[in-house]
Structure formats: C-alpha cells, structure tokens
Image (tube, rainbow over all chains, first blue to last red; front, side, top):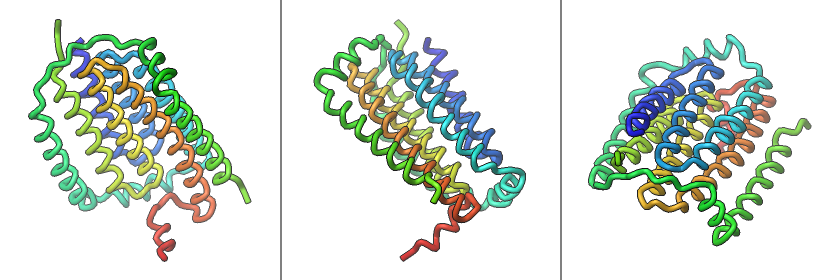
Length: 161
Length: 102
C-alpha cells in the first residue's frame, strides 16, 4: 500500500508537469485526467474510498468531459498549436518558476516540522454520509445553491445573442 | 502496520499546487489557465484528505466534497466565459482581454 502511494505520487507530479508543458490542448487534458486518476489512487490509499470514487467520477469524468466539449466547440486547430509554440518561450518560464519554487520551498520548510505517521484507516461512505446529512446539512444545501447558480450563470454566459 | 508520513502527503499537495501556479502565471491560452486552476483546487482537496487521514475523521472528506462542488461550478462558469470570449475575439489569448481596463 505504501509503495502504491509513492508510485501514484510520482505519476501525479509527472502528469501535472506534462499538462502545463503541452502545446496541444487535448493532450494536456488527457494528462490532466491521468493526474486526477493518480490522485484518486492516493485518496484510496489514504483511506478515503468515497473521495477516491468521487474524484474519478466527478473530476476525471464529468468536469473533464465538460472541458472536452468546449474544446471541440472552439475547434482549435493547427493554427493554435503553432501559436502556442510561439508563446511558450523559455524566457517566459523563468520568473514564474523561481517565484513558485520559493513558495514551494517555504511550504516544504513548514511542513517538514510536522512529524506524524498516518496509519491509513478506512473512513467509509457511511461515516461521511452520516456527517453530510447530520451536522453539515446546511453546507450541502449551500453547495446545491452554488451549483444552481453555476448552472444559471453558464446558461446565461454561453447563450448566443 | 505500514504507515505514510503525513508530511509527504502535504508536500505532494504543495508540489501540485506550485505546478498549477506556474501554469497560471505562464500560459497565455485561457483554457490552459483554467486547467491549471483545476490542478490547484485539486491540490487543496488533496491536502484536506491528507489532514482527514491524519486525524482519522470524515470532516476532511466533507471539505473535499465542497471543493469538488466549487470546482464544478467554477468550471461551468469559466467555460461559459471562454465560449463568449471566443465568439467575440476569435482567439483564446488572454492578452486581448487587457482592453477591458478601466
């Protein structure tokens, strides 16, 4: 199980790096799906099977299909790929990479001081749902209102005049 | 029983977050910017799941569900905006939007 965690972590990092280096949008999207599935495996190893399944179904399934539909609608062809190659100059990467590396260094420095070993124990669907429909029922209602607002906004924004 | 150090999970979340941040700062294609935002939100969710595993509670998973909902709503609105932008400017370059400056 512990080996599975590290293998999935390496796959997630490599796939995520591949996402931001791609010039072809569809390839980037496929790498993003791979990264999300690797994170789903990590969730399962950490004892959150419900979150793992939701990550695979909702993130890697529904949200990425939404992306795919929009990319197909936009119909970006060879022209965009050439434009991407022109935009992605090595000079443009330097400053953001340095800033993000500094931020990452600080985060790692803080997190290294935490010293605790997780012994993964399964927290199953039942515990999560008992909390969801018990003390957190208001949060569920607010989430549903948020989704409704997103639906209305997306309908309104994507409407043809 | 084998165990995973909690800092490794959190550092993985930090690495994914930083990669997403580099993507947001570097890319000029708005679809890639939105995808990088997804990576960052997902890294936040991973941190919550690691914290949930640390305490052995289910609350972290509930926060992950909230992040999932937020990401779904954000993507729906963001993709709607991308479609509208593409209709108006016929490009996915975010720099054309600089004419919106007041």
